Image (cartoon, rainbow, N blue to C red; front, top):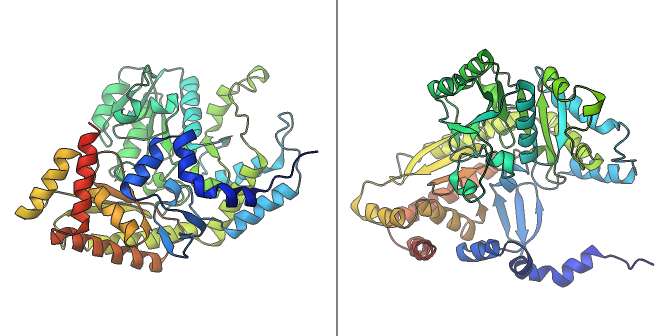
Length: 461
């Protein structure tokens, strides 16, 4: 007889070992990093845009699990959908039938993507990108994919080949023969297309690293150039899609842009079940799946599983019923406007940019002699340390979780749940103002922590 498994008892007995278990059995650098910057918190529960620790203190989440928690944590509609699908005891993943949930979710997704016709469901954002890369190469018969400098499209080998950051690529060669072009540079794109071997350009309409939007007219111009050379436009909407930027897709900010392939994931999961989707035009799918012999030429063992499909359907229902996209647009504009008003007040604050609830806060070299000396000390040790100095007191003093937008960047990225409102904007802006006040005072614990980061950076060289 199977011994009873009690998850609650297991967590009660072993939960306190969480950091030790990670250090011993998983990525040992993660707990080390968290201890170093004071992020080694113990969160007991979560709901919406908040976490709570064992003492009942609340923490505002401005990170949303890197965008996965688009509806916040434990949305009741998504929870119920998952309970319902488990209780239904469906004959899932037989591999040789057609269950209704994948078709229903594809129908709902395509309803937001009227120029696209078909969907492939995988398990993650990087898998959605891998699918798009394969489909583009096969459909065009060409080997090379262009990507933008500083892009991030995932970390599996194909996706890594179109990753615009060397820190992720180093040591993993050989990769696919793909080529970087600057975001917004149509001349560079045109030059590469003249070689005649380009299958596609893959682009984030707003880059997650640094929060840089494609300049006006770029996506439309790129689309026209690509189609002229019988190449495809792939929009990576893994982070920007499903309302993040105030439209369902970020490419919809520019009129006339209709990508041939679109990748989504993250928020489609409801924060529960990994899921990725690649949407594309009918002719592309029909070329890949050109005969019954090729019916499984591209597939995923867990793709289209009932739990993921139920979560996705529930997410889209909530987005429509609760006007989540509109909230992202309105609340994002409020957040960006409130923060942009601080640029003239703080010399260390350089720029506030973004779309919807995807906001980048960039710091820059100050003018005053005292602050300039401290800034130079940090930059000499490692670029990005000042942004980290801001992130840490936001958590330690104000219980707000944020992230530095990328390695060696003085940019904080805010990607909170799309359900946040004025209350959360007020809390963040007040906390951020307090942190910037302390930074500009030229002393205190914040700059002491900066010295600790400098020692750590120098020691890692």
